[in-house]
Structures are given as structure tokens and as C-alpha cells.
Picture 1 (cartoon, rainbow, N blue to C red):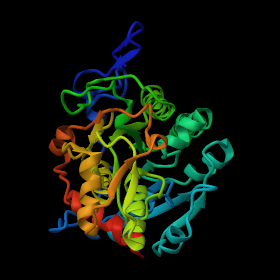
Picture 2: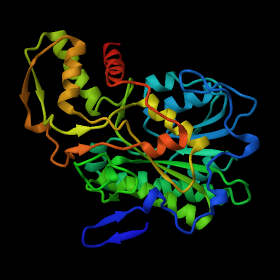
Picture 3: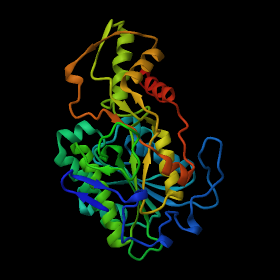
Length: 370
């Protein structure tokens, strides 16, 4: 990191989002998976790719999670060789039943050295590290566990991958997933990658630890690393404890029961939401067009209040219950504004969101109905 300010406890990323002084040179920086084995296949109007003459081998950790299951399905549809690493306790029956054929499944406990080494030992071209504690409230209730799983787990994956891949050229690419919550809170504009970072919650701290673990192996071992800072995203199948599926469940119940009122918390917070499939598309594009040693925001750049989302859910359901404020639903550590600028990602990969806010909400509501 370029600067550490003790007074403000803020870390500032180097200009342009580059976090890895002393890492591999520019000639090695491009994250493409090697000319003979690069992701390939013609583009299609839906923004994806189809099987081409070559495929690559990708290890996806957290493959039975909300995002991981979608990424595995996308990579398989694109014709790639996928290894899905399942955690010990985060599978749901629905996602387990939806596992696509042709995937090699392995077990992974990121808190155990032997488990991690066994998982990363077989050669692969890239690792997308999604395994971790994803629910902020869960991480904040037990920040020690969040740190062990997220930060130390990533350090373990990066170290073991770098160690077993010493003789491989090019070195495997490790794509690690951080969060927009690592930034110093601001309300005047969307966050860019060069903004200072200073986590204010246990969850955000563990995510900054994820980044630092990746950069350490980039500098010390030459492992090719890309960091993504994903802003909030949702879709069918997300854990119902997240805000949008939780709100959808409450409003669906209100419609079924003709409830005259629903409880709400503070709906003034401003957020930036993406459809999970747009986030998956960003990960896939970064595997082939991202630059190692760089950080990329994954965000829509479109601010929306929680009140606006609540109102759209009501509109889509055709209801207008009275809103009654419930103090127990108000998060004291909630940021008033969390919006990202993904211009860097767009310029590097041609990525752009394909799903609207209503598309996201309809998917969540359909999942609730079914």
C-alpha cells in the first residue's frame, strides 16, 4: 500500500488502483491465462461466450454458495474445465440439487492447511476465491471467525497456491473478492479504486485482510493476483437474511395475509445494487482481460435508496401497506451511502450491467413465490 496514515487510520491505494509495488513487471502483469490456453469462444448477444477450441481449468472456491454456484454454471456453459470446492457448512439443498454436470467437486476447509493444499495442488489456470463469510451481520457478530475464514483463509489459499505453482509458467491467476465496504465512508460521489480504505466493521476489516493476503503473495511469490471490490448484489437464491430477500419475504407475506402494515427500519440509506449474474460476468471477463496487480470495483454506479427499493417491491406486488418503524431493524453501523464507480472495469473488459433494478427484484420475488 502506498500510504498509511496513523492519525486517520486510513490506507490509501496507489493512483490508478495499483496495490503491488515490487511485484512482477509489466510484461507479466496481464492476467490472461496464457496464449495457448486463453479463454476463447465467440461473443454472443447475451454478453457471454460459448465453447471455443480451447478451454482452461478454473478452481472456484465457495462453489456451492450464492455467487459460486452461478459462476460454476457460467464457466461450464462457456466450455471450461471447472473444479468446484465446497465448504463444510454453506451448501443449501437447492444449490446442491442445481450442480451442473461435468464439474469435479472437492471439499475445502479454508481454516485447515492440509485441506487447502489438497484442493489447490492439482494444476489449474485460475482460482476464483469466493469461499468466506459473506453476510455482514454474521461477520460483525463474530469478527474473530470472519477474520479466520476471510482474511486468514485467503492467506492460506494464496500461500499454498503460490507454493505448489512455483514451477508453473505462467503462474496461476488468483482472483480474490473483497467489498466496497472497505472504503472510507463518503457521501459526495461514488467510490473509485484509488480512494482511501478504512474498514469500520468486522466484516469490512476481514475483507481488507483478504486484499492484503493476496497482495503479499503477489509481491513475495510472483502469484498473479486480481482484487475485486464487489458492491451489493442480489438475485434468486440469495440467503434470506440479506436485506432485499428479507424485505421481499416480508412484503410477500403481507400480500398473502392482507396485512395492513409492515415493519421497516431506516430506509434512507443509499446503495448500489447489481444482479448476481452481472457480477459473475465481471469475474469471467476479468479472468481474460483483467490486469494482475490491479483492483477493480464491480458496481452499477446507480444510487438508489432503500426506500426506493421497498417502494418498487410494493409496486411489483401491487400492495401499499402502512410502514411502521421498528427500532430493532435499524443498523447502528450502517453506512448512509455506498455506491461504486466501475469505469476502470468497463474500460478494461467492456463489461456493463445487463439487468435493471426491476429485473433483480422480480427474480427475488419469483423465488419467494416458488
